[in-house]
Length: 200
Image 1 (tube, rainbow, N blue to C red):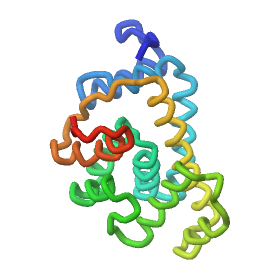
Image 2 (spheres, helix red, strand yellow):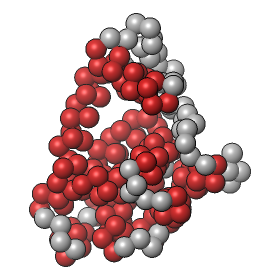
Image 3 (cartoon, rainbow, N blue to C red):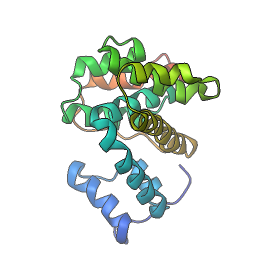
């Protein structure tokens, strides 16, 4: 990453809040936090947008859409970060998370979960071909109009954030609290997309 990020010691306002959050939880500032701190107003707007999405669909559906989108994009940053968030919140166990990372919408969770993941994957890879049939599947499973829109926004906002990190070549930091086998599973989609068969 060649862009210069704000210094830790000189951070103020929202940048200081971003840095302090990482320091309190993990003892260091993640590369993706430093990159987004270059435009703290955009980061604050991103957080505000997320807060408007989650209430209607719940944290589980938000994280499933996020993981589905991150997997489809091949975002190491977001698969690791949101994999850990899902574990800590008790939304998925390690086995479910590993299957989701490796198999996506074929991971064998319940029908509603898999529909959200499949929808987020398609938003992230082939949105131009989507039709009413894609949203109808969510409607048939009981999602309201607002929830369908917010699942769409959850996937789209992950595309925004993940693709920005990828485009800036932000280094991927180790995320504490994940066992090595799970890390390997979470990183597999991006490695496959890059043609990296070494697993390193």
